[in-house]
Structures are given as C-alpha cells and as structure tokens.
Image (cartoon, rainbow, N blue to C red; front, side, top):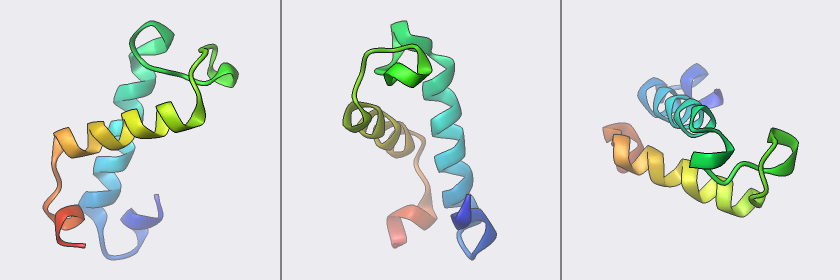
Length: 64
C-alpha cells in the first residue's frame, strides 16, 4: 500500500493483487495462517505471496 502512495504505483498494485489472489484461493489453495482459517505459517504465506508477485511481474519491482 505504501508503494502505491509513493513512487512505485505498479509495484504496489502488484503486491495488492498478489495478496488478493492468494487469499481468494482459500485454505485449500494457499497456506493461510490460523487467523485466516488455515494452518500455514506466516513464512509460508509470505513466500506464496512473493511468488505470486514474481509470477505477475512488475517492471518497477524488478528495477528496485
């Protein structure tokens, strides 16, 4: 969210979209943490989101 408010709007949008994609997969499709009704760890969830950002691609993120 801060990326979008600063100078990296496309990177911020890529992160938000990745989070939304992963959360939409639900506990059967993503390693959601217990507070999100899953049984994954914070590290697993973070890695999954980071992988999704990489899959979506973002020229601004790659330049940083």
